[in-house]
Every structure is written in C-alpha cells, then in structure tokens.
Image (cartoon, rainbow, N blue to C red; front, top):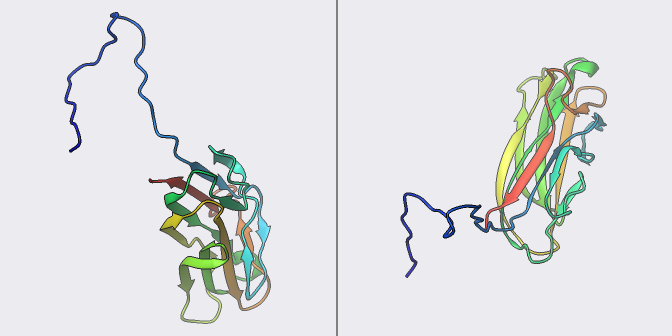
Length: 172
C-alpha cells in the first residue's frame, strides 16, 4: 500500500535553508529545423537538421534521430510537425504525409490530400505518438510530398511560414 503525505507547509528542521526534492531523471529532447531542407517529388525523405533551439537532456538526439539511452527504456511521448512549401512550385501540392519510425518501422503517419490536382500551397501535418521504446531503439522522422510538378521545400519556419520540429519525453 502506498503512503500518502498531506502537508500545508514544509520547512527545514533548522528553520532556514533550502529543501531539495529529488526529481526523476527523465529523458527530454527536441529541436526545430535549422534551415530549409529540399524535398524530392514523390519520394519519402528523412527530415534532418532539427537542431534549432535544441533540447537534449541525455545526449541522445542529434537533430536527425533519437536513440534511447542506456537505462532509459520505457514509454515516450513524441510529437512531430512538418511545414511544407508547395507555393514556390506553383501551389500544386497534392498529397503530403509525415511518418515517425522506430528502427525503420513506421509507428505513426498523418496525411493531407487535396481532391483535385495540385491545389495545396503550404501544409503542416502534425502528429503525436506514444511509444514503448527499448534501449538502443532509433526514432526517425520522414516526409513524403507529391506535387504536380517540381520539388517541394521542408520549411524551417522563418517569418510567418510553417515550422518543422520534433519533441519528446520519457513518461515512465
């Protein structure tokens, strides 16, 4: 049976000083795309270079992938969104999807499609996923863009444009 501690105030026995409460050493990581990345029409590409405003509590995230560190297996919450520019190639985006993969296996996808040929200008698909990860598992992020003509751009979010970023943390 768990103990319950209910108090109105906590003070050190000596009447002064600080009280330190131990916190769990949970993994947190995240970053935004540092610069625009070229996409390739009708091809799934790995999103790399998410090092802007990077957070990495356990040196396990390199802006391209996250590798579960030793002793940190468990449940993870991971969010990914990806801004895509079809405007520079004539507003002709048709289908876009993003994927979160673990060791190369897709664990979550989100897609956006238009019911007519080439009418998307900017899109920002987003998803979250809860994953049960083991030590050494490698998580990566991917984008597929299909435009009527030309290659799209994965956007770093400068100005008022869509932003590409990932973040995650260990739940338990």
